[in-house]
Image 1 (cartoon, one colour):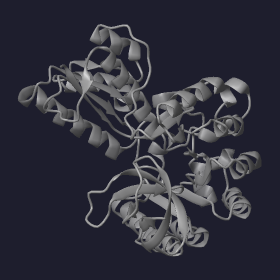
Image 2 (cartoon, rainbow, N blue to C red; image 1 turned 180 degrees about the vertical axis):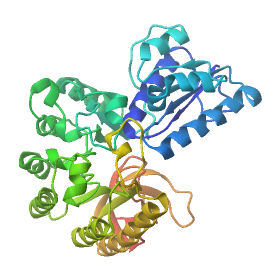
Image 3 (cartoon, one colour; image 1 turned 180 degrees about the horizontal axis):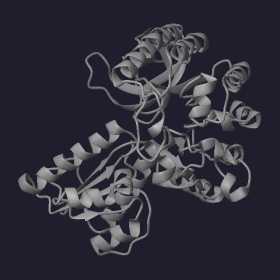
Image 4 (tube, rainbow, N blue to C red; image 1 turned 60 degrees about the vertical axis):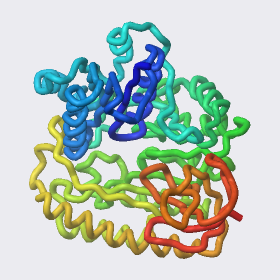
Length: 424
């Protein structure tokens, strides 16, 4: 049988596009394989967000191109955000590529395969969870971010279409829906004139056999009390807030065009924790943004220590062409930016250890993702405060269940970012 492989780089939003490409390819009579050596068609869905992502995308294209010489590959197809940013450069620089497909240009891709199928998704996640992309594009225009230039303005999916899609996913065995977008808090503003995330959560919460609803990418400028109240009220919605604050110094927040202040961010965190004592907040920070002084960085460190975010990631500022921040001065050296990132993560490691150690002896709900290959463990899963691939893992030492089950686990030990437990 004809086989294809797909390599999906970047974020969960891009993964949803990859799932559409995979579905179309299967409709053309191909069977998916993880072995690039066997694949007659290799699709690389690239990321072009920051420098590291661009370098990974280029490296992956070159690696895939090798299989046209050493494997069965007859057709190398490249698409995604890197293509959107550098379409002509990619076409001219990689003669091994057979087709360069513009971002989300599924019609052209179907023409390449010689078919006229519908556009559906083949899940590339584990079968018990799926991403629900509620919108694409972004209207925020943060000064360091190329996403609006790549993905365009905010374009929400109609609410009923999302509900129908979720019901279909649940029927197929999905138990956890992960809501994703560039800014989930602004879902619906473009087509309904108001935020529709609270209403969407209400409608998803009543779907039979759906157990967990997780929300990613809540921009702090757009989090409302209504949104917080709805998350607190609905039992299926995980009390997990991913709120990328990026920085806390007010002058830098203005320069970043984040449209939010330190005071507002502090207020949101206080409101969440007062209404949901068990809520977990995840954030991301950027170090080395142009003009970040030692005092600005010290303020950021102090804030991290004070807020004690349960989950946190830090990233070095990436200078991206076609963004307002590209020409800002003074630019911070990469060495200093990396050093600052490391300092933040050292602080966070201690915060995370303290948070997880407090859970030892308690019972928490865990969704079982897979059997473990690690010695001494039988399963690996995630708690309500662990998003796939970006947060921690709960390692299970004993108990009986099957993959995809949500089970009660007694925590018996804790590491810096992961937990160890046994099924009750």
